[in-house]
Amino acid sequence: MTSHVDTFARDRLPPPELQPEFLFELPSLQFPPLVNCAVELLDRRVLAGDGDRVCVRAPGGLCWTYRDLLGHANRIANVLVHELGVVPGNRVLLRGPNSPMLAACWFAVMKAGAIAVATMPLLRAKELGQILDKGCVTHALCAHALRGELDEAVATRPSVGQVVSFGDPSGGGLEAAMARQPGEFDAVATASDDTCILAFTSGTTGQPKATMHFHRDVIAACRCWPPHVLRPQPDDVFIGSPPLAFTFGLGGLLLFPMSVGASTVLLEQASPPRLLDAIGEFGATILFTAPTSYRAMAEGVRERRLGAPMGGPLVKCVSAGEVLQAATRALWKDATGIEIIDGIGATEMFHIFISADAEHARPGATGTVVPGYRARVVDEEGREVPVGTVGRLAVKGPTGCRYLDDSRQRNYVGDGWNYTGDAYSMDADGYFHYQSRLDDMIVSAGYNIGAPEVEDALMQHPAVAECAVIGVPDEERGQIVKAFVVPRPGRGVGELLVRELQDFVKRTIAPYKYPRAVEFRDSLPRTETGKLQRFRLREGKP
Ligand code: 3UK
Image (tube, rainbow, N blue to C red; front, side, top):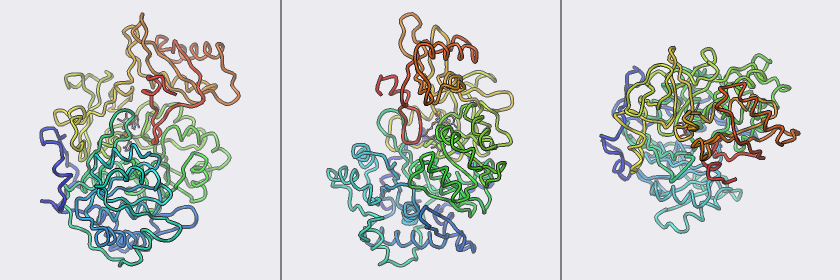
């Protein structure tokens, strides 16, 4: 059963034997054959009498209730179907910084039974072109200010039908079309296993992969980690930095707040100083951002009294996307009094599957498996390893990896398990301890050394603002540990500091892990989602 007239996505699902096993053991994960995630999150909220509650806010005074968001989404859905000819199953590219209009576009695509292909604002024509091709995109809705790179990519691709702008100061484009349309739209009765988003992996290497997620996956994500770990309340105010094009941001800043009738603040600009300002201005209670951003914000936070222990309303802080070093957790707690909720998620899994709330957080561990999921650590042959042993992380749950038409499906899924590519160990209490990406494991003179462990040690030194560790080829040892260090402002760099850092690491962790090479840098290469690109350092690129 499907609502899709355009069967592009269904025709490109991985074959059944290469799909992971899906688990629906929780009572809240029993899905009927027909489900539309927008109806669940938006229409039902208004029908249930919450239409006047604040849903989305943005700087400049913009404030939409759930009823407002539904009305805007309905008008856009009418534009898509009646003016742009979108049929269920078409791929609609979305491009814009986080904003209420982008959220309305996302819900419109869901209600029309189409497939949203949200893209990171920083992408250039070349990367957008890869996405247009891979997703065989048929239509696009794009923030006026970001048209340039998209137009360049579309110019050589006649298969992309219309591109419509929103936020055009001349008042034309999508808003004008919306004004011609009614504010009611009956959502397409999508199958629970109709694909509704293509999420491209933020990937630190190689050709982009498109992961496919169904309507039921979106709802499943809302019913696992949020109620069991985050436990948000209807009066919470969510805020944060990850783009809605990143499933971390889509869940944390749009779906999860709406799943409890809370409100969310969408910021076009969420650099650490702006995010700090906005937390205060909007009285945010729940924050989503990445470890680097917590480190940067910790500096400027003290005088602002943001966290509850300091008299501010902020109570919950979520970190994901990259390992949260014990040093960063301590820095943030020191500055705000708040214990960070760490969680590992992946685009392939949609959202977080191992995590711990503030009460159960343990420095140096990501957490325990989220209800609805199973996780284990296995060896090369897929056999579970003993407690305390490092191996490959394998997970399964209600969501899982489906790459669109991609031979790399075999690398991520085996025997029904999803392999995230991370080296982890599990302790006797069931806490999972991140070691490194499997390909960031350094083997030096026969020792296995996880890059993040050395980074964590370095980060505890007062002269270090940021750092990255890689293995570089070495005749004698196979590889040696090399550290790239961004010094704190005002720190003189030179041989003396190199020696000091090396001795410091030797005293902090096992001495054989110390960086034999140290190079100072002004900054480190990162993806738009804040992930360190160690491969770029390995390639010797700046
Ligand atoms: C790494 C972490 C240690 C890990 C994501 C939350 O990051 C997300 O998705 P991506 O596809 O990357 C997945 C990979 O990132 N990672 C993420 N979180 C942590 N490593 N500790 C963490 N807390 O290597 C993982 O395999 O970009 C995160 C929700 C949704 C997401 N898409």
